[in-house]
Image (cartoon, rainbow, N blue to C red; front, side):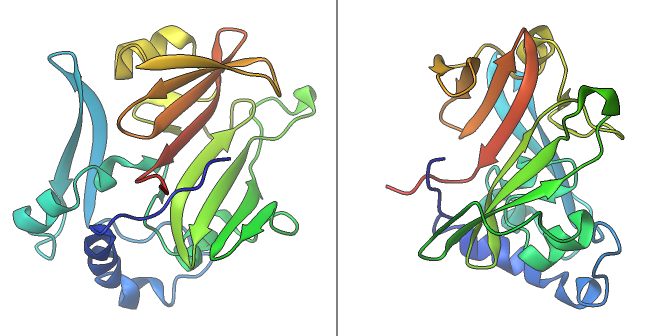
Length: 210
């Protein structure tokens, strides 16, 4: 799994998160915090664009502009830039020990409920934390119950849904470990894995470690 870091603009993300600190401090294990902004990636003239709106007077148009694509980098309610406390307030405690720990980077898994338990597999989030901040989020596995997705794309959706929502990928690569087809949407650090013609994994990040 590649390493990622928050960019210099990460300070802007932390400012926005700090605005909710008082509201989230007492909300552990109680669901998503109140939204100060929202956004989704969409195709505009064939170009993948982050369309974001402020939901609070605390988030000015200037601050929103400085946040670049960050308001659109969320899978369900889990956002790149969330604190670990906020993530675990929504997902609960991680499953087992970290699957990776290197310097200030920690990768934790969070199991979810499958839409079809008979498959014997559970969908899961893999969250990469840089310190206490989520710098990468990945959702993998079979369809979830209730469904959750990114930019209108959910686990189990056909490849045609991804093309309709994000356009064709900038490049494609095989995934030797599981035989999936990796769709990479440069320069946004968005990628999807396709298995048997359907979405089996969604990964988002803000900026790659050099």
